[in-house]
Structure formats: C-alpha cells, structure tokens
Image 1 (cartoon, rainbow, N blue to C red):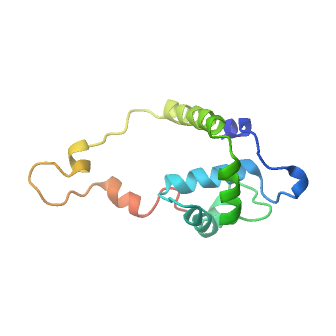
Image 2 (tube, rainbow, N blue to C red; image 1 turned 180 degrees about the vertical axis):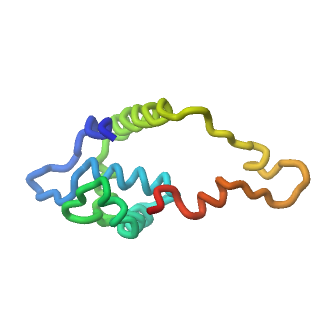
Image 3 (cartoon, rainbow, N blue to C red; image 1 turned 45 degrees about the vertical axis):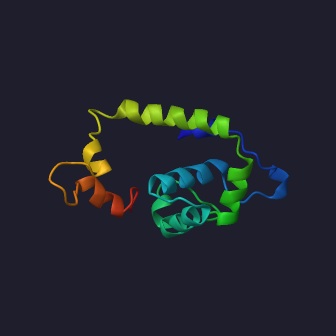
Length: 132
C-alpha cells in the first residue's frame, strides 16, 4: 500500500485533521473490494471491521465517519489516485501464482442446462472479502 503515499492529501493540515490520509484510502479500498458502494457502506464496514483493521492500521482516532470519506472523495485528485491504484494492483497481480478463472457463461446466466449456477466464489462473496 506504499503507493498510496504518493497521492497528495487534499486536506489542509491546519484544519485539525483527525485521520491518517493513507488509512482512509486503505479502508475505502478494502470496503469497496468487499462490495461497499456508498460512503455510508464504507464507513459502516470500517466500523464493523475496526478490530480487524487495527491489526495493520493504527487508527489513532478510530474509523473515519461517512462525512470524512465524502470530503476526501470530493477533494481527491482522481488521476493521481488512479495511477497509485494501478501500481498497487500491478504489484498484487505480480505476486499471484497462476490465474483467476472466470466462467463468463455462468456469470451471464447463459450456461447450458438452465437453473441457477452456484460457484464457491459466489458463496465467498456473500461473506465479504477481508472478513476477520
């Protein structure tokens, strides 16, 4: 996650920022990868996973509120974040051995035989990635 340190913190430090900028981005990315779609979902996910998050993040002032996430997302330079995010993904993918198989016919529901297809990925996804 060190590539996230390259993203400029858009906040003015003299305004008494309570939360570490990189921690905010890490929580947001983990929450989004766990199927969170809104700032409310992200903040709630962070709150529910706070004990787990503290295993690798100091969270000196706890998990940021949804308003904090929203302010960060509004002020964040999207191009700068995209470059850092792509670097992080490239590092993660580079450490994987093998590949990830995706059955497109099943995903689209057009596989033969009709009926509902169930795959381990679907069952895992219901319990969210990053579950403690």
